[in-house]
Length: 478
Image (cartoon, rainbow, N blue to C red; front, top):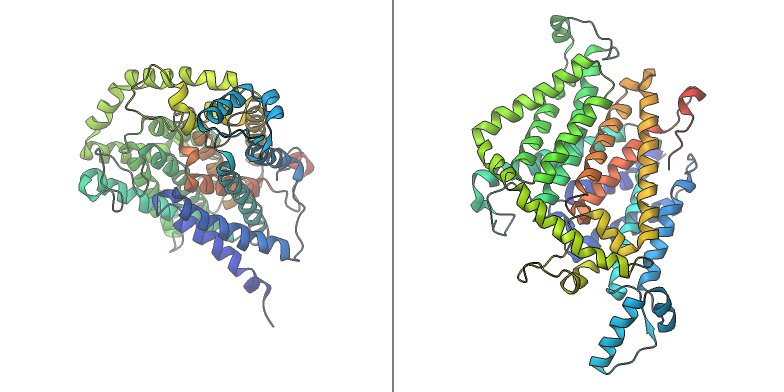
């Protein structure tokens, strides 16, 4: 007789494989590498979702409907449409195509709204794979609660490995990023851009903190908010499993240090935002929260001084000049929004049109991204679709925050699922803050990790048997 858990082993293995390997080759930024993961998710996890017969809790599809609408709209942008319709929806796009047709002597009756054309579908398929990945992971976490520890553990382990590699790069820049050389002394791990590297680590280290806090709860064997055991009693209760708390905190400390020496100013500011959010949201006593934060900051400050905090300080000394440069890019990008406010220019098209619109900037510098995810999505999707996207994300985050705050007043507050879910929520807050000044959302590895954290938050909020209606009201999540 075959145990049911054995039949579910391949999808769990696929999830862990994605988490463990997707950052390794430059964050899967290369289209060929990215396509491999997309195929694995769509064919493997998607096929498993279609063929499985096990009982499961229905998915709240109303929360996924905006994502489906956005995917449909992005696909429509890539489809050939009658030029008369394009003239009505996007006059600026139609005018560009007239000029191209005049130069090339090729008059076309069908053109897409996207300047990337069918190439934009590559991004659409990636986002579809992320949706399938989320649904599969939610299902696995619901059916196998112990799988959450494995997922969180892999995130912490990968983050620690990336942090260690990045710190070695800072000390010995000749190491490079895999086989590529580094243009400046900074921690980058296996990611080409240090800003994306910092964004990825800011998704990992809060999970390690959540695991450490969960281990502390097992040490005390009571609600950590009301623990009164003495230090000696705590030491006598330590066992092999709970000694992992030190390893988790060490991993988190290394990742914090690597973010600091990535020299990504946006990443460092986002890191501080995540620290502040964790300090507010973790269901611990004020003294315990301050103690954990103090330990991490002491580790960060001590080793930071050894490695050279003056490098970080000097990096922030030029923030005025850098900020002015980013502001100029934002202002130069606004005509793209105004001329394509309804339909956008298509996913990935900012790279093509930036040389046309970004006037008054250094000619030798090519801006393939706006360094502001909110602005870039408004340009590429159009204002109505971008408003739907950001309104949907904001609504989900607000509801998740309220749901977690209600859970923190129950006995479930000390469970691993809630503690890790709370840490994941804080990490996502940091990602949304970082999106204002960088383009970390464009890295496939970051998207897979952010989707994983969203699944962890949704799992923490999942209604459980015995939870009172007072605590479950308003917690419905996809």
